[in-house]
Image 1 (cartoon, one colour):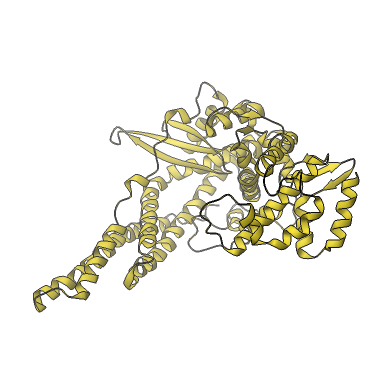
Image 2: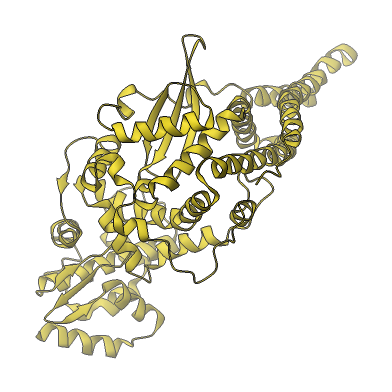
Length: 487
């Protein structure tokens, strides 16, 4: 744990600062070279030709690409967004205890994030005379980690401050943002003006990424010394394994429901999400994509296995059970007053306006199907008038079906996009048609909507998929739909 060379990060940090200055010198050099073309033509040819005009336009383009993005800077968080010491004394006691053990002596604000992550930054006020540490802690970490493991996460973040990383970090962030903005602005320009900035950006990302990875290992080592290597390794393990699962659950299941002004039990839903496997295809695809992403020399964090090895632990093995003990027993949610209080806080911080509280079991009947019915009733796919046996014929229409049922107005979709929209519409239509025939919806986190009636379960998305892939013939489907009509 103590093998991190303190001189190597210092040298790399110095090189990062040199490269930061080099980026702006590169920009100035490119602009100067382009400006020189019309100047030289004017001096030596007595006028400015086509090359000079193009070069001058290129210089203006580069200057515009390098302009400061003041409006895009991270907004200052309102004090109302931070957690209060009076409401959460146990949390602040833990945060301040860890800060003292690490050696950080700054006023601290605590911010609740919605991801499986933690961060620290320094907010400067009064022209830099007052400095406050802002510590962000992800809401799910309170449910996934024990108190000691959460303390190790906090120690890691305070380690960045103790190690001086927060002085260099803003420079690195702003330079990365400036390079990315310049490349994006110049990508479609003439004369490949983006090429020098793209190549320079790759060099900068490689060097600054190496600095960041060394800083992460040093912060891990400090967390292990402060809270123990076992707690630090366990926290890393849980965050690594469960972060992509929480992200998929939150963005595919929870947020779409919250956007309908409905409040659901988040942690209860996540427990159900982890139990209900396999997940529907889109969720599984996103999780697999994250798992398959190879390490890059531009990454700001070392590979997970390398971080665990630096703590004397092995990495996550394929097929190993998910680390769910704390999620089932409540983790350290007592720091936020318990699960109900924690979820109340989450909705206070992350939503605006009043929400209707529903259980997951109620969503299909009270939210999903009524919305589908409102969209379809009275139209060309009215589930009350279109027989179930019509599905194969509707599928054969393909893009024409979308053209027939879509709202009037400009349509720029490709034929394939129309076909996909039509298939999704038919899944909704089949669900609504089954509901009209007495089927009751059953919607579970991570799963496709299914409906049941007297022990018969139907998953509309699977039925449509079977017809498309030929698993069912049209005759088999019509025989099945005839049985459904008789129930």
